[in-house]
Amino acid sequence: MKKILMVLGGIFLVFVIAGIIGFTLLAKKGDALDEQSKTYVEKVVPEILSDLRPATLLKYSSSELIDSANKDEIDKLFKWYGKLGKYKQMGDVVGGSNINYSQEKGKVVSAQYQINTEFETGPATIILVLIQRDDKWQIYNFKINSKAFVTQ
Image (cartoon, rainbow, N blue to C red; front, top):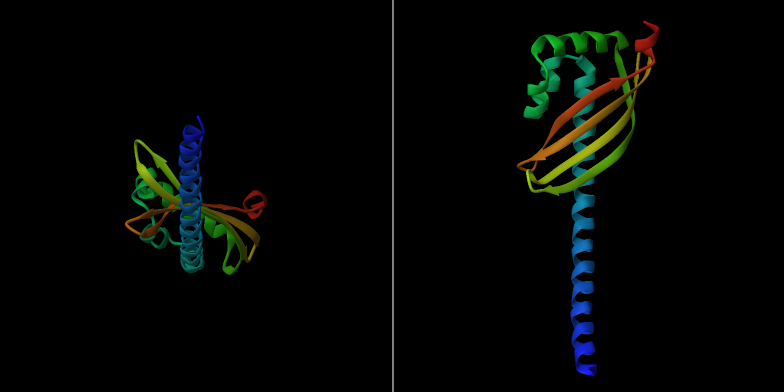
């Protein structure tokens, strides 16, 4: 009986050590993905907001975002965004990356950020979802929320 308990204890210890190693590796990978995705956001968002043209957003978009709306809908949306006036600055970038696994899609690396920005008409919040394909970040979803839209 003592030998069986020692063997079971040894197997349990191996699983615990493997779990700790796996968790440590995932944490390091997650930190790297957070840094990469945030750097991407800090580069791309000011470019998109500076001219508020659909072509600029589409240049960085995933195929899902491109396929989700037709050209007229995107043009209409950016005309609406134009009511914010000139882009002034980007503030805090809050969010991070996720790694998910599913049977349908396999490994999916994504990131979600909320970005505080300032326009001529006042503050706005950007909600941005990224997806990583072939180690390249792309915009999966892009929204601008502002009280300026309500008052106009």
